[in-house]
Every structure is written in structure tokens, then in C-alpha cells.
Image 1 (tube, one colour):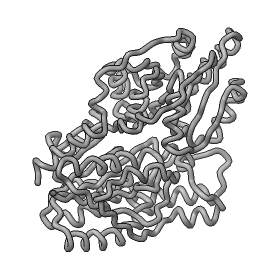
Image 2 (image 1 turned 60 degrees about the horizontal axis):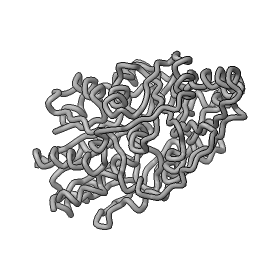
Image 3 (image 1 turned 30 degrees about the horizontal axis):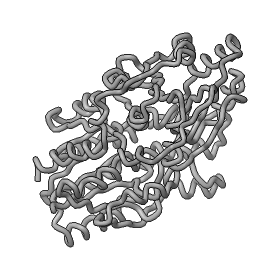
Length: 419
């Protein structure tokens, strides 16, 4: 088989959506004649730990792990926190001076991102891998963007390089309220230009992101490979007996920019206007502290259940026991290209999706094409309330294109064209 060196920061036991794209590619690559060799960290600063992904690592996959230097480790020691939720990277209320200084340092000193401490260790190991294996293609997947600096440093050996951008180089919703100073911004843009000058091909997750990346490199080098769902995950039997209570589930990190305030408002009106309608709001994942205040303000905290982070397997079970599944596209710059990764598992679950976001965005387009749910703007309270009480039925179609195996086949076609 041909060999591909996969450079990724997120790998089991990392949890969260970031690990799934690369992991599922590696799971199916051997079926199409490609052997993945994975370069990752020994102990990364992951948003969560999830051992349910271990079974997806193919037995023939060689995994090389290296040390890394993590600024977050120092931050956790000073703050006494065992982990740092992704929502905490943005600006918060009543922050300590240490927190503000730490976030400023993160944005302005560690470029292009705080994972740059992995670079020297990973580069040394990558060179060793190339000496011992006949690698045909290099594949790096970000975020963090520093993985592409590693790939660039070894791509000069003449090996084709495919860079995967799950998010643009600068994703504003990751650093809500945080800005770089002029010097840091100039240096970051320089790193970006140098990186794009060496890439053979780019893959990304939406047409909107393809357009954004097309300002950096020729459009004919950029391919859209969506995130997706893995069919075996949905072959597990789930007790989906549901009573009269309407179960509404939001799965994933709920940061400031991803709060479904319009849903909270609709549930508040529903509670006041129709006492016969009983519902439960499930929030599964790390949740910004302000969400609790919002649930109290809208008088729906008693109707809400906050699970915190749970395993992917457990999250899928809750997903498949729901009446409605909620997804929010952050109301931020260039959000038309944002397609939350959870959307595709939502679609495969075949329960109605409530998408809150731009009606002309890529996520909304996918909802309409697959007939998998309903799209609402950020202030459409009454329409959401109406859907919740209408008992809608949906018949999703054409969703198998988002099967992880089929998506891997698309990636292999790119590999075969350049190697």
C-alpha cells in the first residue's frame, strides 16, 4: 500500500469533534490502498478525554507520539483548573488580571497558536519517520494551525502535501473578544503566506471556507470534503421510547457565540402560553457560565438538564432519544461557511433539526438539500415556538454522501492524483 504521514494534534484519547475527522479518515484509508502513519502528541492539552474512540484506530495504523511544551499546562497550575473549556478562551466577565494577561499572551506571543510548543519535537520525529518509511503523501489537519508549519518543514523533500483546514487560519469565533496587536498580526500573516506557498492541495469542510481560502491560493487546488457520520456508530441499539414530554437536545460546547437565545425565548413563551406542553432541554457538553444565568432569566432552568461533557457514544444515545436537535452557527464574521461537525450526525439520526443561523449559509443549504430540519434566523422566536408544538415529521434523503467511508474515498482520490 501507499503510505500517508498524517500530522494531527488531536488523536485518541482526545475527545471532541476535532479528533473525529482525521480518525475516521485513518479508519477507512486502508480499504482504499493507503496506510496511515500518524504523528501526534504523547499528552496533549485536549478539551476532553474520550476513550470511546479507541476502537476506531485501525490495527495496521502506526502511531508515533512525541513530547510537547504546552503553555496551557502553566496556566492550569496557576489557576488550579484541571482543564480549560474552549469557551473560556474568549473574554469573560469579572476576569482576573492573570486571566487577561494569559489570554493576551496566548494571542500575541505563541504564534500561530499555543500548540507551537509541539513543533520542535514533532519536526524531529517527522524527519525520522521519513527516513524509515517511504511516505508518498503528507496530510496535516488543523486546527491547530501549527501542524501545517511542521508539514511545510518536511514537504521540501519533494513529497506532495495536502493541508486540511477544518477552520480558516484565523477563526474569529475561537477568540471571542480577543485581538492581536499589530506586530503579532503581521507576523501571523507572514506565517500564513509562507505556509500557503508550499501546499500542494487543500481540503476544507464547506464551500464558504473554500471561498475564503481561495483568497490565499488558487481555487483549483482546494477541495471540499465535508465532515460526516460513521454508519457503524448508528448500528448500536438504542432505547428510543419517549413519553409525551418533548425532548430538545443541544450537543456540543455552548460558548457565548453559540448560545441559542432565540430558543430560550421561544421556550419561555411556550411555558407561559401553553402549560399543557411539557418539554425538557438537554445541554450536552461544556457550557459557558452565562448560560445558567440565561436559563434562569428565561425561567427555563427547571426544564433544563445540563450533562457536561460525556463520551461520544453517550452523546449519540441522547441524540437518538430526542424529538428535536439544536445546532447554532455563531453570529460572527464570515459565518456563512461555518458548518458545525455535529450537523451530520444529527442528519443521520433522522430527527428534526432546528438550525439557528444565517438562512443563506452552507449549513442551512445542507439542511434543505437533505430535508432534515428547519432553519431559523437569530431572532425568529415565534417560528421556533410553532415548530416545537407542531409535531413535524421529516424524511431525510441523500445523506449517505456524508458517510465517513464515502468521504475518505474523496480524500483518496486527491492522494492518488498527486502521488
